[in-house]
Image 1 (tube, rainbow, N blue to C red):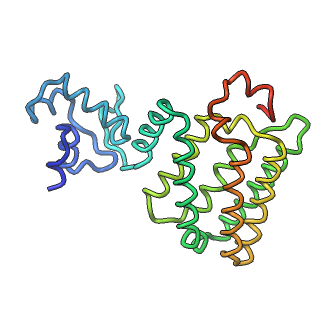
Image 2: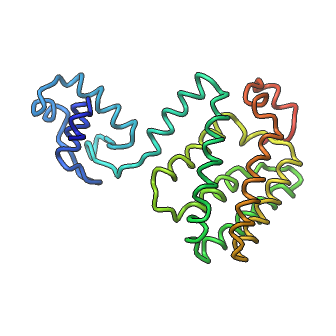
Image 3: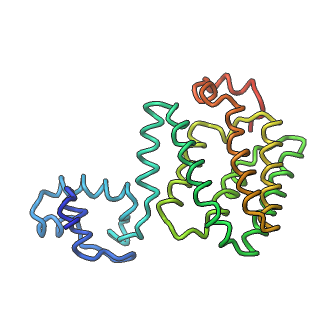
Length: 239
């Protein structure tokens, strides 16, 4: 039985008690008495479950179960990896490229007219930011553009991995630094990707996607992720 492979008494309690989203759990003292371990040890296990996004607690509502989400576990592990070695971003970026290209056809075939309209709006918003006197890096639009393309996938694990990529992108500060010509080229690709999707040219759109994602190599990723924060302020466009 899979549950028996889980070492945490608290996690086993959740699984064996059919912890549905919104379910309010007994106090840790009550659970402690039921499972037969100390409150202190149970509290440690509860914190792990909370960090995994499985439960939340508040003085007013007590402990409540949350819907399962793969992202908190991926994000936490990825942040540890980047803390140990910022160069780990390169490996995760490669994984993201393979995921997006592998799931491209399935993803774009499910996009609705409203989704495509949103992609067009994101392109317009980003280009407007790049046209202002005081240039703004359109990081929120960049993240949302890619996640929107894959938003109809019925695979929560793929979606979590893709979302975690953008958390990593922000953690290594690509969201606050970029050469202006790079940003222009990125959003030129984005615009052409949307045009291809609108025309039903999924093959052409996928090729544009691949070319676009390789642009990050032009930034010198290995050098950039190790650049001191104060050095970044003297190069490219900053917020």
